[in-house]
Length: 190
Ligand SMILES: [Zn+2]
Ligand SMILES: [Zn+2]
Ligand SMILES: [Zn+2]
Ligand SMILES: [Zn+2]
Image (cartoon, rainbow, N blue to C red; front, side, top):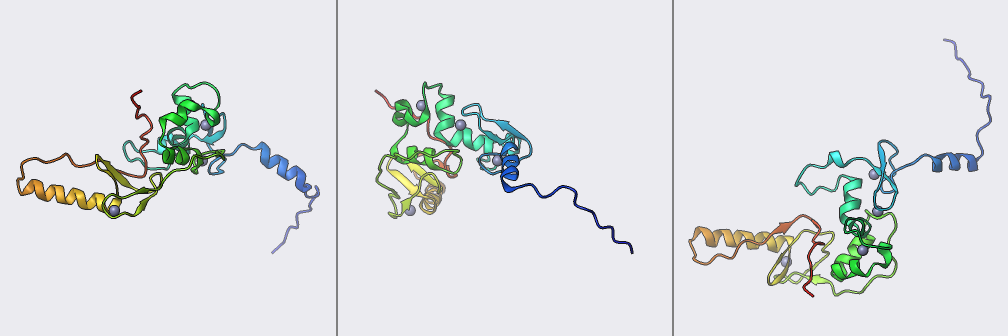
């Protein structure tokens, strides 16, 4: 067997050049991939052109592009055609409850997160009292407040039983959501 020794003609590039070459190659600002990229409409950052991965109504979080557009203030601010920067937008701040505002400005779908965050009381389940991280954990929201995923599930089962038992007035079952579907469009009456 003949071993061909390749002669290295060019010396290894100095680190600075390597770093520069890497920086020059666009990569998704959220996950770091370099294939199939596009630029966001809201902020012009490179991002995976992956919306096709998303299955309608699955609410899966498998698309960088979709996640940034739908679950960040940057995307919301742009969709709503507000003026100025989202970081300083009073309209955006008004459109969200503090906990949701914090989620939209600090979650992993952001290129840049907000530093000055409003304080908020943690949301608790009205049934068992556990703290619900609204942006990250499944929950339901009914007229009496929020329910954690387990209590929401139990409530649905109880309602179903009541329904089967033929009770007269049935309140409509609460909507359960996968972690955040974006309740952002809720408008406050002024
Ligand atoms: Zn990505
Ligand atoms: Zn953006
Ligand atoms: Zn805005
Ligand atoms: Zn609960």
